[in-house]
Image 1 (cartoon, helix red, strand yellow):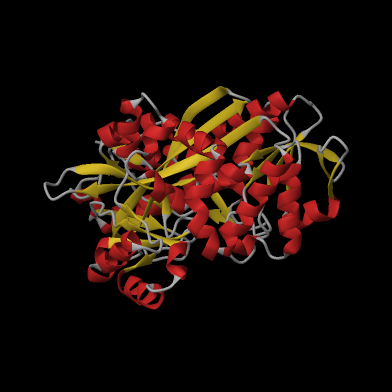
Image 2: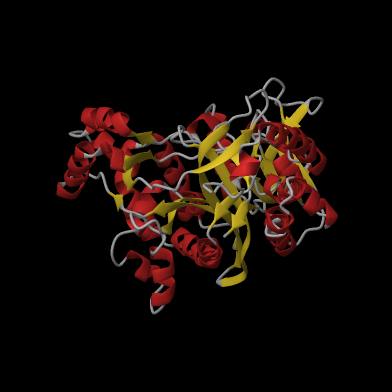
Length: 476
């Protein structure tokens, strides 16, 4: 059984068709929604967000390991964001050759020079993993990356458990349906936002969602907004351009947008170079960073999530610097790391290049980018490294061991796609939320999970990138 469901269910065409039709209706009933590609800025027409027909099997021990380490990752990201020397050193080579990281770093430096205007820090992140199947068939948990800005699908993943419970019941798998866990990241992420808003201390102030131009995934945001409104915390949605036109700092450096004081800026945009369509966007980012609004994330926490920092953290002795006298914590974090290699100029980087060119299929070449669909595999690695191996341009990337998850079979339900069984790979995300006031951590929690599954023919990309679909773990 290479899926979480017996073969007699998986292979009965009439039953699968009936289950798929019913599952789509259930997804709509439960609010697992997206706007359409054709009309991303209107809710007149919506469809179900793509999802798997069945939940996918995940070993319970590995799942619990991912949840247990999350608060340590929260602490680690927060400590890195406060260590200016570490960030400077870790990113020195990257900012020489990667313009986007360099621009972010310049803002970071300006804020350091002026002094931070806000002592309250809010972090909402998601750490993503895959299972790496060893030769003896056992699997270990390996981290792909940690997203410290605009980590998505906390809203929709709060609505998918009931869909899969219902599918399993109708398929005659009542016991399995009871093994689908409750999951509500939307409530946990909102708890972090609410705590920060409360500490800001103005009832009139708003939480501003900084959003993209095309808003297909608006319902994912709306679940979090709805949790905030339940607490009588007002929210507004603005794009960079809106803030440029109607935003300013008052004499106390409070951020005022469209006449409203902003307590928290929650970035659901600003993580890719193409989000900054003109210089005004960069001016707006700097203005928000200089303000007394709480930024989620602030600029140094954004930088703490870069691939280069991830690679530097895997070096011997680096984690110990952030967790002195806590060998168990170091071990818990380090056990999730896979091989990560520098491409800086010098003998160590040369060795990485040679290794990647010799066996490109063993590795993934990663640029400093978020948002899915950016990683480089196989023959493309040979091509790109072949071009840049003698040049400093190679420092814009890191190299990582390719993780080999066990393939599983499932049906991927997406609008207008044929109903066929696929060989699939799954990726587990774990959401973290923390709030720090000055030196004091006032909240540090793991607030839920996200399982995304894609056909094994796709090397890269997430749900928003149109490759992966939403899923739930069926714990084994």
